[in-house]
Length: 617
Image (cartoon, rainbow, N blue to C red; front, side, top):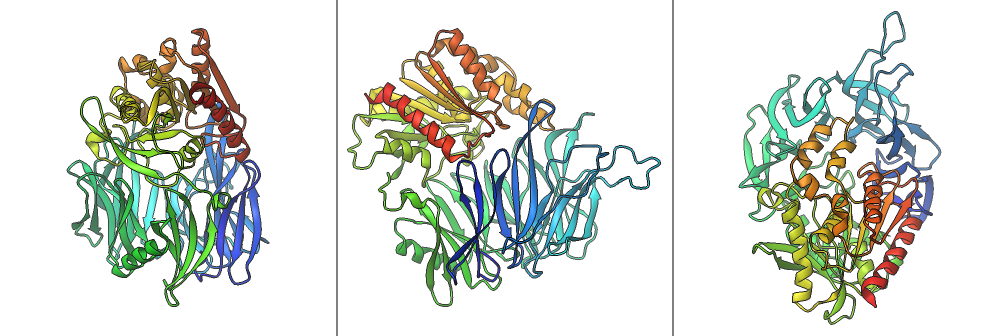
């Protein structure tokens, strides 16, 4: 929503992998198409208003560079009438000494300055400036103020070679700086980041603390609230992330704001750029928000009563005066709707539906349940049954999530809804190794601790049969990314449990996963995460393909920069060599997410036929 509340920007699915940028005017009812991306390989990812007449957008994707899939992104400013589009890429030359993968990041939308933003931008020096009057010598990350109307640039922070990021107070003052620690002559990341801050008086940088991305220890800043001159940051408390308010006045005085005995606090909420922090979020069996503002809490509860099918209410933005709010409402049986709420008139108006094609269609409720693991641990999970089903003796699908450092949440999810619409019971376990439940639950992670993670996934399958929900002869397992790994490895560990396996963009060889990261600055972090030892052999489905007894369907995008397509190719080759039935679907020019309506339709159609043949007869 624009700062004056007069317009809305929407990213809408076009044909195939296209994404359209539209601007809607609620007063006139008109919607204007501004631009689009073809998704092959660049796609529009987000847009935000910088003033009421101009947007900043990012398009990104994967490119092949020196034989590797490398991520690239670019920013541009576009007027809301679509007449002017200006790239925001820093100047560079053919002599630049290193590759620039992005244009930088908008770190402050400067809501009081119509059409001006602060950007953190990386300067790349020329490889050799000797004897050249035009050579560029600046290198490192700096902060620039950019007038999007004229593209006039004013330096706010001179480039620093060690810096990786900055955070402002939302009102133009740069208050935090991040400096990652590197190891070895090759400049590999260690996972440890030094965080420094400035008081309002500035300009000196003072130590705030460190954050260890490997262990999760230390301060993890989320947002600076200028009204209280403090940063809201996460820090471990009794093995889980808790929220603190840390003063930036030189004292670093920390006050505990919120914690939960069972799950991590994971975010804060603010109404709009530069406005105050109004609450924090976490997810147990459902996503929840704790509001500091009692008026907003009352509004949330009122909206939940007014929209019973969409009880998940979140505040997505506000006008500069805070009187008009952009609200998103959704539920397990409703994909979600954006609304504008006028706090003065108390009027709620629909802006856009996320999936209008599903309007009027009855969807399947998602039920939080608990599965008992083989060692007695209580595994949180979600169960989705076909509409109108008695929930007995059904064909069923176990659907482990990706990550592994992720988790499933209650709410609309297109893949289990698709499977339930086909008549399958679907269970989604948040196995040990999932994120959000603290250190003990994540443990060694789902690769090093694969035996525990896969055992929990297997327990979910046994739950379905023990409860009489699933026919034990009609079980399949489907997964994406780590979920695909879990699907394949589950079939290795317990070959007689499932009748078929679908693995989308799966990791299949842990040793190769480490090899795939070579040449990137996070190579040592990936190697540490995956680890070394016998589990590289025992926990790799591609090295144990002979144990699998059922048909396997593999799906992969050829431009996948998260999990190389060679992982699926290796699995397919191993299964064929062992004489096992395997099919592989390849999608050219698509990445890990397969964001292409035609490709996803083709994939889902084949999955439906594949499952029907193995567990639905």
